[in-house]
Image (cartoon, rainbow, N blue to C red):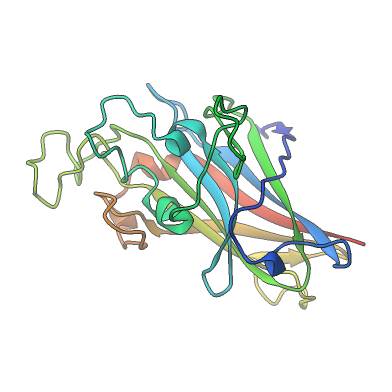
Length: 243
């Protein structure tokens, strides 16, 4: 059955990036929208943690469109003293030392990213941001369930072994896609379609985060994943140009 799509477009705040990466009044602009359709394992005993962000073609962090509140605040249950860096390690390393604060945070600090509790809906979710045209963007979505064990990362694995993951179970899955907002020929990339003012791309699993959260690299562990690949059904990105 085709899922209803709930429009919840949210404009992300500026992070500490070069001002050239953001649209000024004199630039041609476009709205980048990322749509996530939950999969069969989106909602288990607990909600997943996920982040949606943008990088340049060269891998430089641009901005975060959305990150779940618990991950941003690092307010974990059953977490060790050093928290849970393995929950969203690729996003954590991309953001680096940039502060990510809560919506309506009690300390009234500058809001640098849009956050909320994990949506429990089975419907698609949309997150958007206004960016300059004429650039190539890499869109990434990282998603993870805690206690998501399988045969490769079992609950009873011994600490220090390659199978040990603490409370994480299977590592995070990173979906990735590229949108080039320069005009391209229709059909040049089978994963990208182009209309008069609209580009679309399907994000696909590009790798996993580090099982222990020790680095921000993509790891080639996709073949070992089971339910982790069913947290998300589809991820799509679109860019609609404006004048």
